Length: 225
Image 1 (spheres, rainbow, N blue to C red):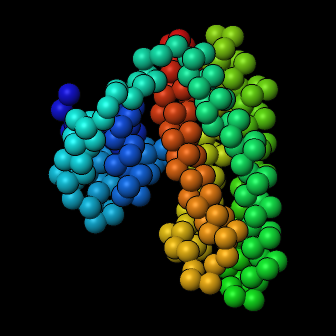
Image 2 (cartoon, rainbow, N blue to C red):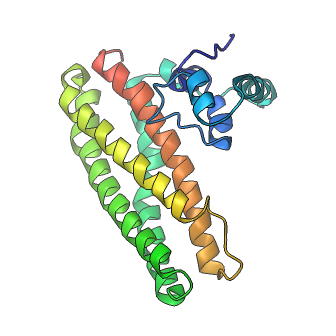
């Protein structure tokens, strides 16, 4: 299937899941910013859309097995995938990263006091909001969708999308503070592991939010199960 540079990055990610690897490689926001056309996103980020399209073609041609097209799967199966792949790991990973951030600030505060202090506070806010967010999804929104009431969930879904936007802003700030997760020369093992863990958290959350914003929520509202 031909990909048009005027398609939104979210639509491309839905139709061609392997394209998300290319988007992540170039820092293209395909989750919260998924409504923007590829052409405009490339222009705003000084990227050549033809180069991006060529990379996507190579990614699609070179993959060993087709990535799951979640737009074609039952909503219950998609929800279970989100819970098992993303929620479960977040419940474990957020406390671990929070503890590491506190330890790095305590031990290395003198090396970068302002940066480490803001990083700890930014992550703490993100952690608290994500945990509350997942609780609301697991206890309210997902059961509604599974019960066939997704078309009546416009309010809860709107709330979830707003929280996704705030999470995206927090992730962007963490990347700014860490200079794209460039590990300082003086970094200890914990510091290096923290930077690596935060970078992995960002990539996972982008995939997670994409599945909800661009696939689960629109289908639930349209009652297409």
